[in-house]
Image (cartoon, rainbow, N blue to C red; front, side, top):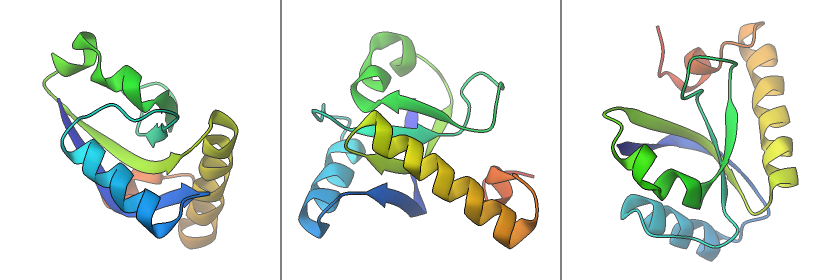
Length: 108
């Protein structure tokens, strides 16, 4: 499993220091208490999913042979829902549709 953090990742309630620290921890696949990530759908259902970051470090996900694109990070599930709302709003404003992969340049 490879975790790919988008270049224009969306965040909620992060100081610059905490944000950089979280990105470093994600890069080396270390646990982070209270970190939620907004990802592309892992099982081709829906347009985005919210996971507790530490769940993605479990053996089931580590054995997967695919990249997981992270579009947003937040310190709680409620803040992650706000991130999803922001992403969908921006997709509609910029593209006129909820094509999240096109917004982040990860899809066809």
